[in-house]
Length: 73
Image (cartoon, rainbow, N blue to C red):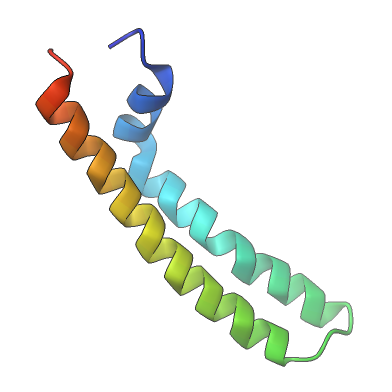
């Protein structure tokens, strides 16, 4: 497993990483609204965060499935 550090990182910290990545568009839209952008940006950031969260979670699960099946332990 030491030959695959990124896979090892995803296996160990995948859920937290997925949540962190999913919250980035929401955080950016909050900052944008504070800086004077229209409030609709907040709704767009929230929707983007939800979609990105689902995509990231599915990616983490796929990596875990592939690692369980293909990488010997």
